[in-house]
Image (cartoon, rainbow, N blue to C red; front, side, top):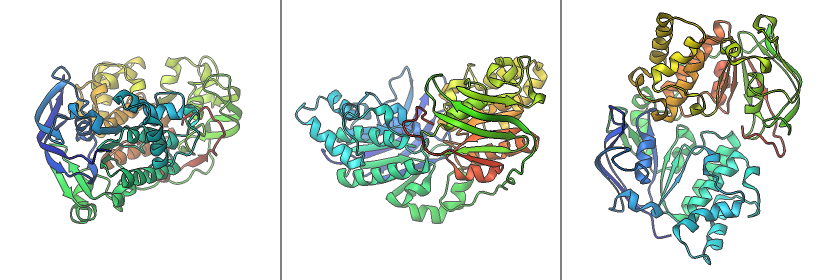
Length: 488
């Protein structure tokens, strides 16, 4: 370790190529060596762009236009990449090699660390994050929380002066969140590196941090100071701006629990699989009632995503059957897995865990119009649906933006909107609220509540207890599965 690094920004901003407005602008601050900073702001305020700038990953003039100045230890960040370690929100994105020890050593090898030093660094890094598995342990056998600790270990082995974490717990179950939070605290205490964390789960991180910096959606900073002081003095203002303020209640009613009713989907003796050969879970019996939510919970690796995709007709049953009510039957009967994509369109809509997996069009407006047009709606009806969804989910200003250039939270809202645009009778969503600021979360949950009250069924995979509480309905809690193939 060569010592903690300083980060300075002076009127800094970045506009991506092809975008009219900057993603972030006029940001000024100095983060002193060893400070621990929680970087907050509304979805789309430019937090991830700012973090990418600190990591030296924004590229040249062909990728965008920079304003102002951003420095790491007085030098441009792209010249300091060995000093900066970045961990992203997707646990799988950080896994490079098939064995734990090799994966942790990968960054050191790229930096040209002498071979004799690497085993010691790997051991120290694994110890710092508390990942107690053999070095030849397969990375594919790790849970989500373990994969995120592995990514953190790989960064720590390079001994950076700055540790940057971009929503490191967004896709983790509660146990994984605790694992990663504890690992970061221990690792930073040992290494002494400067720490910057983007996270909507502010309550998880606030007591570890010495400082909160809040980026404004229209540029500049909304707040900067010790967490307790900032939240006490500006909590109400920040909550209105979309920041999750610890302890601030959500003004949204909760729907009632489900009490039976007509089942739109049912499964009996169901075995589910990703590859059509190895079962992830077996012996599943459940019904999806009309006009209610079915919330699927459980730890990473329990098979939640595989179950949701099977209920949605996108994965075939390994054994047993998923059947739809006769009112939903298509030309090929009552088995959703046998329906065509056109038959699924207005019957069962699916929001994938990764929003980018369902984007097809060149801009947001056209993306929202794909479904209604495929369903045969005319231009006027399509335009009405698109305009309403753009307004409801705060995407109107981005109507002409390429979907792939949106922030993570904006991509999630768009992915939900593309499915709701066709009005399916059953809506299946995998982590519908991840990466959402306070305002986006409230509007998404309210929109799903409206779907339920209008008579539709909502199936939601989530780690968010507040989502389960506000959607009401029924909860399907999956227990851990040993050696599961699923990374839910």
